[in-house]
Every structure is written in C-alpha cells, then in structure tokens.
Length: 393
Ligand SMILES: Cc1ncc(COP(=O)(O)O)c(C=O)c1O
Image (cartoon, rainbow, N blue to C red):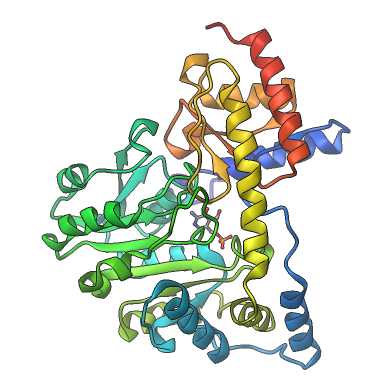
C-alpha cells in the first residue's frame, strides 16, 4: 500500500549522500576508494570546542534548552556577526537550529506562501529546491556557467523577477562551484532588488571563512544596509569549525517578530538543538580563531595542487575556487553525462565524485578537496589513467 503523500513523492534523494553511501559500500567490500564526495572538512573538531561541550555535559546541562537556542549562544552569535561581518543583530533576532539545513528548511517554511517563487542561481546546492518544494513554493533557476564565474548578472536577475517572486537565494562562496560574489557583484544585485520590494534575500554564508586567493567574503546585509530589513543571514558551525555532526546552525532575522515565528515552528518540531553542544559552539565563537585559519591554509594549499593537476588532464577545465572546499571542473569535452561519468569513475577508477547534474550542471563533476594531499594525488592519477583509456576527444 502506498502511504506517502504527493509532496514527499516529489522530493529527490540527495545525490551527495547516495554517492558517498555507494563509496562506503565499496570500501566495506575491501575496495580502495578515494572519496572526493565529502561535504565536510576532514579535520576533527578542535579540542577546546569538544572540551567546552564535555564540561557542559558533566555540569548537567542535559535538559531541554530554550527552543530558539541558549541565551549564551544567541549572544555569542550576535557578537560574532558584529565582529566578523559588521552586522548589528540583537540576540533576540538570532534563531539557533539543528544545522544550517534545519535553519534554511524552517526559514523557507516561515517565509513562503504556496506558489511563491524562489530564485536560485544554478548550479545550486542540492537542498535549496527541495526546501522550496517542501515549503510549497516554486523554484526558478537562473543558469550560469564557468565562463562568467558561475555568477548571475543583474540583468538576469531583473528578467527573472515576477510578481510572484519572494526570495533570492545567494550562496557565497558557493557549494558546488567554489565561486563567490565579491562586494561589487553583490552591490549590483542589490540595485536590482531595491526596485522589487517584495523580494527578500536568503544569504547562505556557511563557507564565509574558507576563502582562497585573496577572495574576501562580505555579508549581503552589510553591503546593502537599506536591504537589512529584507535579508536573512544564514550560517552554521559545520564547515568553519569542522562540526558537521554537531548539527548547529542559525538564522539572523531582520526583526524579532520573524524570529518569534521561527521559534514557534521549532517549538513544535525539534524543540531546538541539543543543549550541551551549544556550549561547544559558544567556545568556538569566543576562543581564538587560529583553528579556522589552520584549516583554511591547508585547504588553499590543496586547492592549488588539485586545480593545477586536474587542468593538466586533457579535456578538463577547472576554475580556481574562491571559497568552500570544492572544485567544479567542466568535463563537457569528455561527452559523458555526469551521472554516468560519476558512476563509472567510482566503479572503474574507484574515485568518488558527485555528478554535476545533481546541482543543475550536467557538464561538470563536483570534487571535494577536504581530503589529504595524498588522496588528491591518488585521485588525479586514477582519473588521468581512466580518461586515457575511456575518453575519446
Ligand atoms: C551551501 C550549504 N548550505 C548549508 C549547508 C548545511 O550545512 P549543515 O546543515 O551541515 O550545517 C550546506 C552543507 O553541505 C551547504 O553546502
């Protein structure tokens, strides 16, 4: 008997998770797989963060916490937003959720009316359209290519806006492309948005501190202060502090009323994140940020090697990432659809990469460099050998 409803039937499984699951199956069978599928840093959570959490646990902070996040953490996030982003938020405007995903899921559910349109630059992170579907909205994709650094243009934005448009999603630096919008590029988009007062911005800044080649992240709400009233700044602890398993993210809302609405949703869904983990998050924000710089430097060094080595393989065209920990090489010259290519690379070359088709860009694969230099070298060697045998130019 079919039990699921029509809405959940339209939600796609996560391609990221399905490739990494298949890679794990092969590993369990004894196959030596190099995984470039990971959406998480390969570093452990820094010790001082773990210790703060253990201390909280031992001190008995094991009961229900406020569903919107502990007062200490909301205060620490507000201080962080001022310190790192130059943004002023009261602690009451901050809603802590169970990871960036939960923050975004709740946000779309509090924002959208049925049929509202959400503008999503493509290639896009796999979950955005599914959040929109689950909130009964409609995704409208704005295609971009590597020729323009995977950035939408102001003209493209203007053209895509209709009376039904409610949200523009900005993800800079981006998963999967690794490219970002600098201050000037974001300001150009702000000019367009000023003439469309119904459109709000969801600014997903989860990779803000992992930037390379001198790229500087600037928060949308900072560079367009007059649009603060309609900007939601979303972030999480997952990538910056290598805390993916802790499930902690947050939304900085333009006003307290909206934050209260998100709080009401969380009252009846998760009751908020785990209590004692939030002490770890406070330590992450308030202690030295050297651990973040250590990871960033390591990622940058890997990116330099990886992009250069990939571009030496015939038919590969790969941009140097401005942030995150992904490269998104263009493999159109290989003339193999991305799902087939990813499957064959996994089964035949034992390299796990994510098909670009899952992100709306079938000429590409997403490869994570959140893995050791040794693994990256192995992966390049295997891909090169496989391509020599299997690709006709
Ligand atoms: C662009 C982007 N936003 C949000 C998230 C959600 O992160 P998490 O729920 O692990 O905090 C991810 C995770 O991959 C991401 O890549």
